[in-house]
Amino acid sequence: MQEQILTGDLKKTMINLTIPGYIGMLGMNIFNIIDTYFVSIIGGYELAAMSFTFSIVMLVNLITIGLGAGIGALVSKAVGQGNEKDKVHIIMTGIAMSLALALTISVIGSLTIDPLFRALGADSNTLPLVKSYMVPWYLGCTFLFMSMVGGQIFRGLGDTKTPANLMILSAIINTILDPIMIFGLLSFPALGIAGASIATVISRMFTCTMFFYYLHKKYNVIHFQALDFRYMLGCAKRIFIIGVPNSLTKIVNPLIVTMITASLATQSQMAVAGYGVGTKIESFVVAIAVALGNTAMAVLGQNLGAGNKARAKEALAILNKFSVIIFSVLYIILFWGAPYFARIFTDSQEVIDIVVIYLRILPLSYPMQSMFMISTSFYNVQGKPWIATILGGLQLLVVAMPLGILGFKLFDVYGLFAAVLLSYYLVTLAALAVNKKLI
Image 1: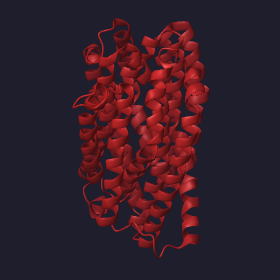
Image 2: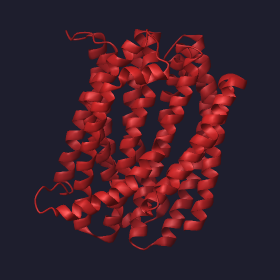
Image 3: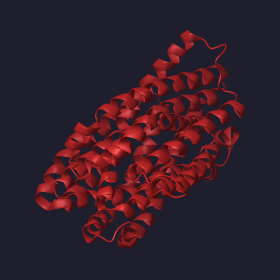
Image 4: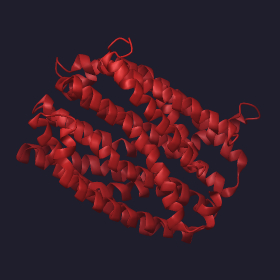
């Protein structure tokens, strides 16, 4: 694949990277959609509880992806430069940093469940259900962290097929375990919403184990001997420089989700449930944007590492065109199918109404979200991740939050969603203007 990235047909190469990358992201999102479907069978408050957990789960996931993207960007440049020592040390340092961060989040998260979700608007009916889900999730989030970072390492190596296959297998395991643990099939005790969380942890444990098995057996990059500790400290600094700003950029979306959740909680718990359903449906579509961003990381990183600046510029333009074409088509599908998709999860008209409004407004932002993710990967491999962090911060603090809160007061959910839509357009137009100056 490295030869194709550096010298092959760009469109074909990026399609070949993006499709398995999307399948891998799809596998990850299947966890959420399957959990949501089975939990919705139990009841409306359980569905609302799942919706409250989404913003926090998304926040932790994207912090992980941000750190992993920093690792992957450095790995892709090391591969392009043919620097084996740098590649191995970056990978081993990244694994150690990810493990430390995962354990920290597990402890802090477990201790802050009650006050955090009360602040988000969970009431006495939903808070115990939220806790039932989040306690096992936090205890097992180390496996989540390590499997997601492992996937980013593979993408940095130019391999999108292995993480895709493993994520699909993991999703299948989760789908099998969910009804068994939630409803108590095959003589297993019925654990309700906690069962969905435990099934996810077990599935992630499988993915984590297999990722590191293949990194060792297929790429021989897992070493504990002959590592230079001083060199690792240098790698940690480089990962930190890219990973921290990238994680800060990634948390913009979950903070927007948190703002929307808290706003809707003032309306009703069922409005929160509807929003949660809408975000689960959209995750299947937005996964394409994430896959395009991961493709950008591999293609731009390896070509810039090899000194092929003109080829990197061409790849950036092609990826942006892909974004506009793909998401314009998908918007039509979501607009038309919104009520039908909503009824898969609920027969509550209040929930369905929120889902329909959401899926007819926010998908207009998907081409912009995709181009911003691609731009973020470009800044990462350029060693300038702070550009995306600044732009994301402006999006959140200057546009999305103040206008979202004002829009909700003046025009209810329509104003809230429209303000978020506007924020994505403004931040992406700014990013495209920056891109022209960097390449």
